[in-house]
Image (tube, protein in one colour):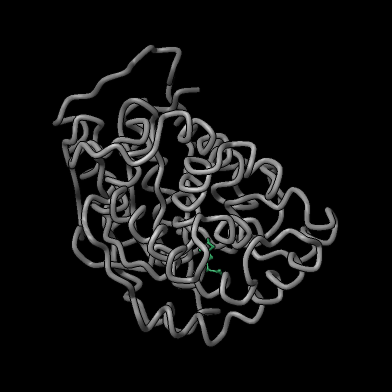
Length: 319
Ligand code: DON
């Protein structure tokens, strides 16, 4: 069902409405088995496919949840949002626009053709090529300086010190020749801004940061709250930075299915092959669902269905 959204001018929800929407989605989809774990990163194929966690965090720091709130998965591509935010915050919106590009490629997330067609221009910070280029733009002169910047940014968004899923990191580092090739190709086009192989490794590590549904919902709520973590109250990035991240999430957050996502849900979102999806309503709340089985585009099937259901029930599609 499509809700009235902005036309209903509905902009606040009670605690029991949030709880009911999460519980109803959990009940409706708890036995849902469409899709399959990612297996191109061998370790991801070992994650429990039944894992199902849902959380909403409001801009005043209230936390609502259903299902598994504790089990962690690797953040994967959802990390791209927060690295982009770091670079926009530190170097300005023009840096990403001019050195990476923000147009959606419309292609699969690790497309090499997308690079070739544009000679390395317009590669988008939320798919692999542009994300690797964006990681290369993070401030710092060394691997460690850049990595510490990225990790502390994620920790501030989540409001706690996050861990690394070491087996996932090692598994991907041993099999990420395609991402290394992407980084080398960008380097050949003059569109990498740090050593391509070291950058790919930093990027691989950022993708292995371990999060649960509550962490992801707090990270999403920090975006919804204009860059200030609503639980810790720490200002992580400015609202101007978030305003530049939102349109890229809205147009490229779910890869080549981004059009279908925004058509159905109306909220900027971002998926990862670990099974997580975040979305948020600016000024209202962040939402996250983790469920590892993916569709062909690499997006969690059950997380998409659940968020669609919750947004319809809350009438929170702003369009
Ligand atoms: O680079 C990769 O392929 C993974 N570390 C991340 C890809 C990803 O999450 C795409 N997601 N849907």
